[in-house]
Image (tube, rainbow, N blue to C red):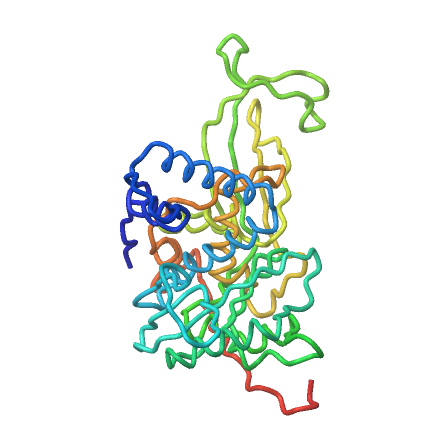
Length: 363
């Protein structure tokens, strides 16, 4: 899948100018008149500053854009089109959903994206009027409507039909557990859970050198070093999965990607590997392993992509530094191929299908 090249500095600036430049009756100045252009620029700057000062608006916008990137990258779509853009003329009261997806089956679906960014997410809610307007738009387009929820705190996604939301008083809602039971990310978009044998390890081998050589100094690690200062240079890098060293390029690329973005917690330690030789070891493993089944789940592909996105757009202080990442679709299929055959790195690709809706009163 390819990304359509746009020229936002040309076409979209004209769209903005046309939308906000409303001349008085009888206005004869050209649209390029400096005063009119200046007024448009001032409105753009004021609107941009207002949006950038609203963390919730930024989070919602980012989740919206992120879903499009995820849908394009997973490989389950022929076309991913932003739906809530451009001019719309209507008779009935409607709300444009965020995305239109053409699946590999040639079926079209509409998707509204919601971000739930509580630290302990439990439920996703929709207003009654919003649901009615979204449904009316879907009916006019003869397309099923789905809600994609970004559970921000856990970097995970669910995709459920609008009818899986249940009315409670003045709103519709769906709980986190039900959303994951009904999740269509795998069945429609080709998402999947990835399993492998833990742990993952990244080892840096370092040797002591004379300080005048300009190598990096470290102090006091490990305990045997005491308080002496050492100048070290990295002489080798090794990656392991399940105790096996990765030697193939595709193996090392995948393990490095997982080390950076997987959900497993990471520990680091310094080890003495010989006379004047040390190893800095980074180890990732699940908090509770399932050795009896031969693998542990390290995350869904959509989850891994989401963590990669936030690594590239967020600072260590959790501040947004970019609104998107410059990555072409196809990153996940290249890094996590379904046809990887390796005795050193056996992978489990789990497709999780949605459960049938429960009968009234069963939940």
